[in-house]
Amino acid sequence: MKGNKGFTIVEMLIVIVIMAILAAVAVPNIISWRANAALSGDTRTLKADFELARSRAIKDNTSVTISFDTGNNSYSIRIMGIPPFPAPLPDPILTRSLVGTSITTNLTGGAITTTFDSRGRVNNTGDITLSNGSKKAQVTVNMIGSVRVN
Image (cartoon, rainbow, N blue to C red; front, side, top):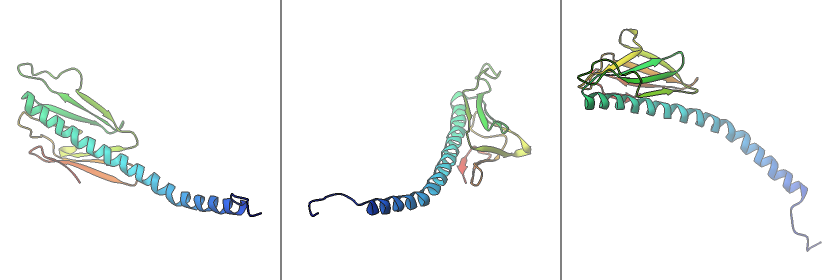
């Protein structure tokens, strides 16, 4: 039977077993990587939103507030009024919900909001902790409005 070409059933079973072993090793790592990537993305987004609020406060010469809703794992950014109209605008300029990531605030005096003034400084400093169960990341805002990821 020199002319027969193809694979035997034993060869096919060996390939299937090797593929199953590789999948068993790779799948947990992929799941862990995906959760870490989601947390990292949410952290970068929160930092960018803090920077957006600060730049908008400076640009519009007004106050911009970030309010956290830790129960719903969301936050919103609201302009507190544009001179000469100091009343808060009715709708937030941004509302974001984090899916699969929980928010914990550790701001001055236990506050759940922080406000950037027209010079980019904040009234409540501290940390916002994001977690997805096993991993945590912190976004820290200091008194001069600088934001960093820890």
